[in-house]
Length: 391
Image (cartoon, rainbow, N blue to C red):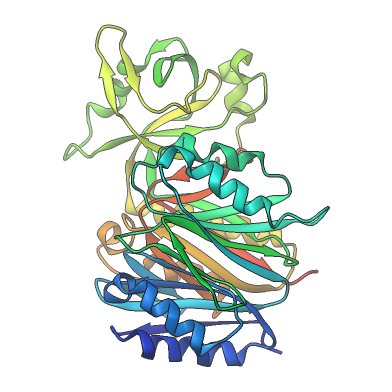
């Protein structure tokens, strides 16, 4: 019995791409849902591709999104027209789209759409996608109010909408949307940021709004200067934020906090938006709070490879022997060949651990995964969702 099947197609013809999708769907025993990722000309013609896949596999709920490139276990495709996708069996899949009339309302609309699929006592998974236009980290806050819901997703690329096609064949589109899964085991998720920390994570001791003023009592601007002065080639320096280690972390002794820190903390990468030379502070984002941990970081290929290897090892340990069924990999467009100088680096890491597991995904404008139990907007990050068979 085949419970999941991926497909990959290189070319510009939506009808031919849909035939590849239909062939994959027919290999799956009682298919129940699908995701399709498109790039290049196929991404630009996403609505046309959606109509074609609806005809190729009638009655199969599917969500289609556009990225800068696409990924499957067969390889990464960048800089050309292509599509990949995954079709699975089991559970119920409900694609949806939202109007997203303004970026501020987007999180509330996504949360409301997901809530419509919530069932009493059952865990659900929501794959969400949105155009990046004006989307700030705080917009996703309403998603943290969802209960028993695993959220992961990404930002689309280009002008194409998110396309949702239900079991009735009706096609809906909008600047955001996704697909809600019930009756499947929640995926195991790991996020891996493509960065090298220039210092250990330290505790933020003072903030004002979006500004970090002090890090363990030292002016934030001075801390940045001390770690960035000797960098070669003047790379762009990011802020890496990590959640507090415990609710009262703002009052925790910094030395004790570091001793309790996990070996591989989840971090959020943020740009330095500005500096205040008078208060010697750094403008970062409205997420910053006293007690959070912070470090400065640069994009780094070697560190990205090593962290993704660690992330996949951690994920498989968490699986406790449960058989993997399929994976979704959402990878920042700032990774891939632009980071490594060659293609398939991340994919080879995944295949070394997962073998020929059916896999599909895309290169995205941003990523969404849970950090500190809250769905969060990620940058320069690879997010892997691994769906397993019940143990």
